[in-house]
Length: 401
Ligand code: CTP
Image 1 (cartoon, rainbow, N blue to C red):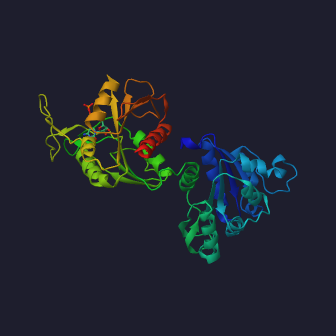
Image 2: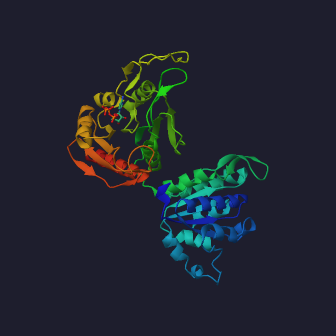
Image 3: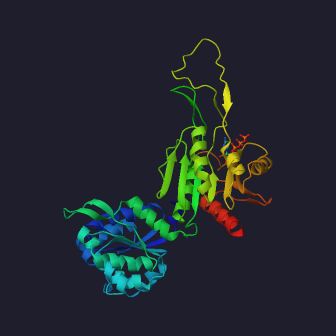
């Protein structure tokens, strides 16, 4: 969510019963660090008051171009320019029709016409109005013009009908807004990411594992999806929510991860192996709970397959392979060895000894190593920013190839 921080979101609320949901959106955008400037149509004020948005956004809500008390009123152009992203949620059939035809007769539509920012429209209305050919045609016009349309959800509507027309929940709206802010430079690419720890069962009760939380891999999957890639996330057990627009395949052990990854690998343009895969598993998994005895217990471990090395051996032409290495000593030498042995194009090396790097943190400090011997040391940065940077470097390698 960090990528909304510092962005100016112009949020236009138009007159439908879902207008109240825009209050939660305002609040969540602000929590994510965005500045929210709310514009309302006159009819929206019949459903929710401007004061609600003023309190939540910390800015004056602008209702129409004839509001003489407020500096913005003759300066809708300033708001149009200030916007990093322009959102209409909920968008009525009426505002969609006006937007499609360039009609500018209130604060919302005049500002919309003037903005160069990406525009996100979240239609919400009665099913019949939404399905009406003219509304669909207007939405098509806007899509063709590059507007981002967030499809309404289906369900029971306020009018008692059932069908498409509900304003989607806040996480879906936030995803749509983040997507509009992100470049669509991974569109058409399939990206597979692995994340989290593996668990190797000793018996039905116990397992061997590691401290990975999955944050780095999930951040990469989320950012790749926002940038337009078709993302598969093969994940060991974590407490994280599946990022929007990502297909998650849940696995437990290294052998399960091997099967899930190797079977999907040939179709991928990029594979990023951020998972902390257990190198060993108990040679035998007891079917019943192991009972303690009086003396020591010796556990025999069997080697797990190396997924990344297998992918390296079977790399498809043009496919890019990115590995990770976490080390406690000789970071760069060890990492360079792994890059070579596993036939990676890029390797992200981090040291568990660095403050601000490693398991469970929201930041990371890494050095990127490339197959041609280049190295790029990076400063401490949030994991979602690093996720974008890793994807940028992979995209650059793809463009070079
Ligand atoms: N990896 C893998 N399969 C394994 C072990 C590791 O795919 N069985 C991948 C990890 O996902 C990571 C990279 O290999 O991208 C490096 O993992 P790491 O544990 O640092 O390296 P190992 O090869 O296991 O070396 P060592 O444990 O000896 O440091």
